Each structure stands twice: as C-alpha cells, then as structure tokens.
Image (cartoon, rainbow, N blue to C red):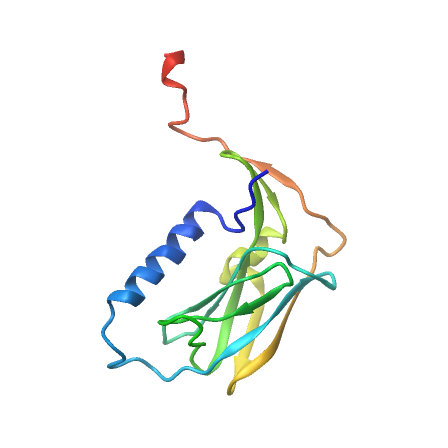
Length: 157
C-alpha cells in the first residue's frame, strides 16, 4: 500500500503553489509572515501523514506537510516561512492510496475543505505549538472507491 497523504488534486495544488512561490519576485510586496508549527491529532492520536492548509481571507494560504509524529511547519512563499497573522480557515487532507481508484481516509473527508471543516485558527505571532484537533465522532477510517476514466488497459480494447 502506497501512502501519499493527499489526493491527486491536492498534490497538484501543493505543486502549483510551490511553483508560483518560486516565480513570485524576491520578497517585494509579500506580506509579513510569522513562523507557525504545531501538531494535528485525530481523537487524541497524532495524524501520521497528510497536509494542512490555513487560508486567510485576504492573503496567500500557507501549507504544511504533516510528519509521522503529527507535526507540521507552515509555508507561504519560502520553505518554513510561516503564515500571515489573523484568523484563518483550516483544512486537513490525509489518506492512504490503496490503488489508483481506492483510498483509505485517515481523517473525515469534511476536513478536506475550508467550507466544511468548521476549523479556524488565530495567529497573533510566532507559534510552535498550534494544536489542530480532529475527530471521527465515533466513526473510523474507511475505504472509498472512485470510478475512473481513462484507466482502461489498451490491450483489452
């Protein structure tokens, strides 16, 4: 089983955000950022893979990869440069890839989008212990299968 921690679309987003960050000037016009790090837990246990993204209303989002201990450091433009201050909406995406059309969610899917996660954080200055606490609310990780297009074996045509 291959562990990715993000859906293909989210991985694309992370790569695109990184590419845009590399092409955006040398600091001119960038908002001030503060270092932000913390942990993500699910029902009290560290989340061991995935990504977190904090989304301010009027600035660029910050993203962080969640490590095996549940720790993350946020990045907006440059590696580990943190995020802008203020109150931000939060999303967390984490799953294991079982096959190209099957994944096991490591957190409830509601957390994958800021419009459904119900999560916010307030950043007033540097933070090294931001705690993001998620819950299955009595549920547990589950497998989801997707119908895919274009995965037909050409030899079977």
